[in-house]
Image (cartoon, rainbow, N blue to C red; front, side, top):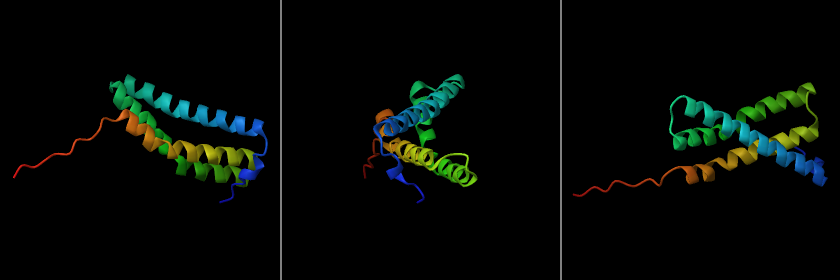
Amino acid sequence: MRTEIGLLNDWSQWLVCLVIIFVATLEKFGGTLLAARYAGESWRDAGILGMLMNTRGLMELIVLNIDLDLGVISPTLFAMMVIMALVTTITTAPALQLLSPPVRLLQLHL
């Protein structure tokens, strides 16, 4: 709740925020995808695992709050990183729907 989105008041700051979101998504997804493929998973399963790595927003928020308290990051960077954590977490479910096959319900014939 300490996020001040109003600190992002310039298009260049929003551009930096978009780059942070892109890089964070790419590194979490790509790193997990490659590791899962190396471990023998299919491309689809490796992609699903990569997407699931984007749900780690709560852990990121805890670390970001500690960093802000210690003065390691500025309030502006904190706001960018919180937006990144929220965007990557929120977009996980729609992305998983694209990678997962539709679930077929079993029909019981009585």
